[in-house]
Amino acid sequence: MFGINLKSKEHLIGLLVAVLAFALFKPMLGPLVTAWSEDPESSHCFLIPFVCGYLIWINRERIAQEEMKESGWGLALLVFGILLYLLSYLGGIDVAQRVSFVVVLNGLVLYNLGMAVYQRILFPMIFLFLMIPIPITFLSMVSFPLQILSTTLSKDLLLFIGVPVIQAGNILHTPKGSLEIVEACSGIRSLVSYITMSLFFAYWNGGRWTTKITLVLSTVPIALGANVVRITFTTLMGVIYGMQIARGFLHDASGFVLFGIGILVFLIESHYLKLYFEKESAPQ
Image 1 (cartoon, rainbow, N blue to C red):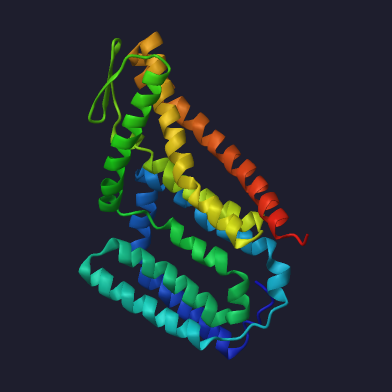
Image 2: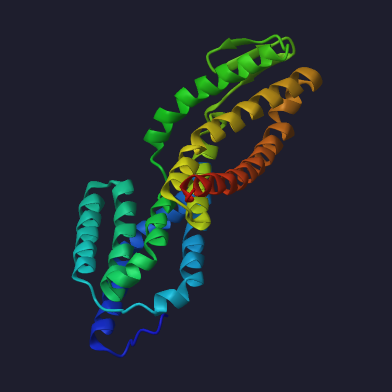
């Protein structure tokens, strides 16, 4: 792909190792794709391999300039990933199996192409870990506090704009009816997606580490704020036009609109953060 001579004995061995590794992981790949398709929180995982492939492709010329040779560190990482998979497979631990798959992918690249090439594509290779669905148990632990927090903040915002509302746990009671803030509306889905986007924007936009870290950390208030605005707007429309509308089309449409707004916020934020930190670091 990058000018590697596959006729050499070493690369033929590396190719054979890759084929055997994928054959070993075959039982895990089907359930992984099923999890992507059935879990709304993991639907973005379909894009991760394509994004990583694109990032590697646009840097192909610089990658081709590096010396390509086998790496012992890659072999060690490969062996570690396979052992982790075997242990997690025997123990029935799905998350560890999926983690080991990405570890093995990294090990194969490092072993066959060497450290110089691997450093060139380090971000895309690490980015692959984001295609692993977050365990449901962890999501449940995080989503409930987010449900209550989003409900409380939405209630406060509704009272501020003059809408009479009473909160009972994760339910908002209004004169026109009640609206339950279910787990899917906790904001955890948008938070996971925003974190993925922020990491991509941080890499794509370049700049200083302070810019990148600030951009990634900002995902939490942006995701929470967008979700509160969505709940508040949906409840307000329900009070005006009826709760049936709030629970139907408006609920789904507002999610897509706010997600698009979130992307726009990230683009604007990444642009101004880069300008600010570059200005701060510029010589006086």
